[in-house]
Length: 385
Image (tube, rainbow, N blue to C red; front, side, top):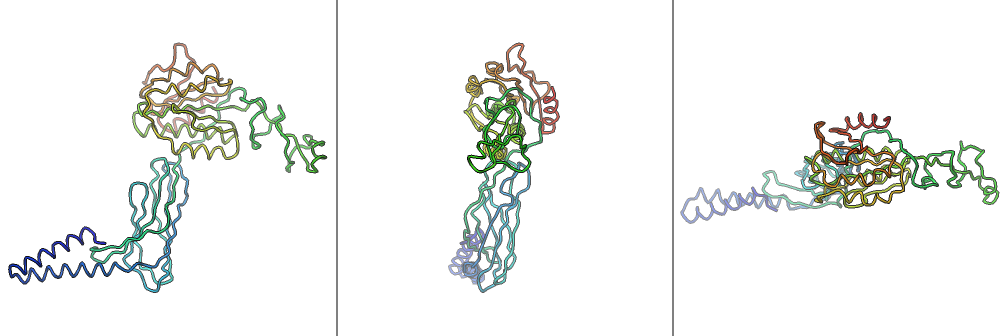
C-alpha cells in the first residue's frame, strides 16, 4: 500500500516523534506526528477500490518489425462516485507502460491509447492491466489487476520480391492445394464449377453422377519450389541487428513464393522449421513462424543440409547466413546439384568479405546485402540471371 516515499515519511515521522518526546523537543514531536498522520490519511484515501470496467485490445495484434501498434484500454466508471487519482499500468514484455487516467464521473467511459514496443520480433505478452489509485502526495497506492494478458506478435519486415525461376516441381501431380494456379499440363483433381471457368473442362460423367457441375482442375507441373536454409547460429552474425535482417530476408523470399501459391520449405541447423504446399494462407503462416525464430548456440550449420541430400531434385535453394563464422556452410556442395539453382545470401556483409564457404569451382552464387533495399535490388538481378 505504501510507496517508497510513504515508507520514508512514516519512518521519519516515527523517529521525529520519538526523539521529540524523549528529549523534550515539542516542535520535532509535532512534525513527526504530522508525518504519521499524513501517511494514515493517504492510506485511507487510496483504500476504496474503484468500481470500474476495463477492456483492453491490441490494434493490430500482428505487425511487422518496427511498424506501429497500440494498446487501447476503455475504462468505464460503473460506480456512483467520481474517481480521481487513477493511473493505468500495463505490463508489456519486460517493462511497464503507465498512463494517467482523467477524473471519471459515474457512468462515463474514457479510452486510453499507448504505443507498444515493436523493435524486436517475437511474441510480446501484454498485461495483465493494473489500475493504481494514489493520494495527492504519492504516499500510498492501491493496485488492482483487470483482465487477462494479450499477445502482440511482431513479425519480420518484408519487401516485395520476385520468385526465382527454377525447374520442375517435386510432385508429378502438382501442388496439393486447391488454391494453386490453374495450368494446362496435368490433371490435378475435380472441383465444383465457379463462374468464369472454361466450359471445355466440364467433366460430364461426374456432373451426371453428383448432380453438381464439376470441372477438371489442371496444374502446371513446372511451378518453382523454394528451399530456404536459415543460419541461426550466433557466431554467424556480427550483431543482433544482422540476424534480424537475415530473418527479414528469409521472410521476404519465403513470402514471395507463398504469395504465388508455390511450395516453400524452411530449415535450419536445428532441423525443419516450416513447410508449406501452396495454400492461400501459407504466407501468413510463414511470417508467424519466423516471428519466433531465435539464435542458436550451435557451432556448425552443416546439419541443415543433411535432410536435403534426399531431395528429389529441382527448384531453388537459398542459404541465408551472415558474415561471421562459416563453419559447415561448405556442406552446400553436397546438395547443390540436386537443385536447379543455388544462391547464398550473406547478410550484413562487407563487399570485401572473401570467406571461402564452398568448394573450388563451385557455381554457388553469393549475394551480399546490408539492407532490405539492397536485397530488393540484388534479388531482381538474380531473378533475371
